[in-house]
Image 1 (cartoon, rainbow, N blue to C red):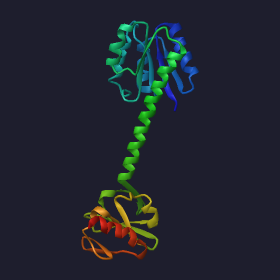
Image 2 (image 1 turned 180 degrees about the vertical axis):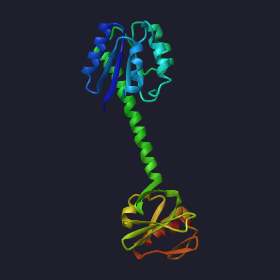
Image 3 (image 1 turned 45 degrees about the horizontal axis):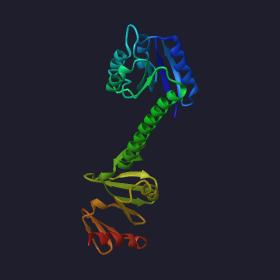
Length: 244
């Protein structure tokens, strides 16, 4: 993971030091260095920034004032601030504006790296949470090609799925016409949750929570009776045992 950064400090030596630390850190990418916060404002909406190394005590616009403007920008949820200042009395106020870290000047590279690593951990956890959310969304929906379109199907709407030669028909709650797609039943089965769906025949998969009744060798969903194939009787028996 590479994090894009900008540095803002009105002291040229301090700005040069922070910039050199950023360049020295493999997972940081310096997009800009600014001698005052006013110049940096334009970068908020034009650069893909993830970390702002921000001095607090500056003329024209202080770091605290900048942070309040930043909080109203489109980048608020995409980047975080690490304050760099010689005045420790701003520490509490810095955390009040949701600063990620507070570096007290003078700081060395080891201390800078601690702040950078905290930022890296923060964005990695954010990325993991996003992936988990996306995977959860994938589990809720099935996308299939039908009539030259990519159709999204809510898994909770599926009653049963049947294979007819080279095609698969997906039957849905409240829909008279099934969605037909050119694929195999095995391919569809691999994209379904074993907890919610059960294959009971070489040509049928049923949604377990849509089953209305179980026969000796069949499943009833509404007015449809679906046979249980010989190869699937063991898994069907386990279902019967759960219902018993």
